[in-house]
Image 1 (cartoon, rainbow, N blue to C red):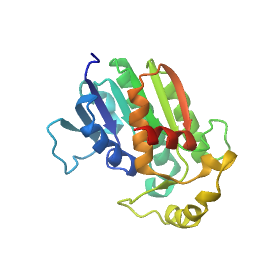
Image 2 (spheres, helix red, strand yellow):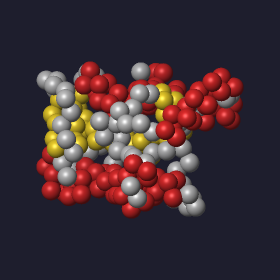
Image 3 (cartoon, helix red, strand yellow):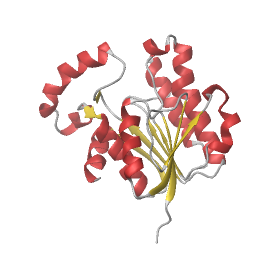
Length: 223
C-alpha cells in the first residue's frame, strides 16, 4: 500500500495556488498539507497546517519546510513587484531558496509554475528570469522535478491585472482556432493548471519534466 504523503504549497493565495490548495486538501494522497506564506489564509481544515514565513530569510524556517511533494506557485509581475529587482527576488530567489531547502530536507518532488517562453538565454527579462529559475531548480537533488509553462492564465484574480484581462478578452474567443502547433498558445484555466500539477505529482515519475501549456491541459483532464 502506498504511504500517505505530506504536501507543501507556497503561493496558495494566488490564482493557480488557490485552486491547487483546495485540490490538495481533498486529495487522498496527502494526510497533511502545509501552506507557507507571508500571512495566514482564512481557511480551516483538519489536515491543513499554515506557517507564516519570511521569504527573505527562508533558511530560518527550514524546520517548517519538511514534506514529500513541494508545490511552488510563487510569482508576480514586474509592475506589481515595483521593480525588476523585486520581481527577480520573488520569481527567482524565493523559488530557488525553497527548492534548495526542501531538497536538503529530503523532499522527493518539486513542482513549480513557470511561464511559456522561459529561457535563461532570452533577451526578454521576464523570460530570462523564469529560465534561470528553472535551471537552478533542476540542479537540486529531487527525485522528480516538474516545470509547468502555462500560456495566458484564465480565472478570477483577487488583484486586477489590466493587461492580462485585456489579453484574455482577445485570446479566449480565438481558442477554438488554435490547433496543431498553436495548441500550446491557447489560454488555459488556472484550475486546469492546478489539476495538472496534482496529477503529475501522483505519477511519481523520476527525472525532469517540462510541461508546455497543451501538455498541462492534457494532464489536468486526467484528474
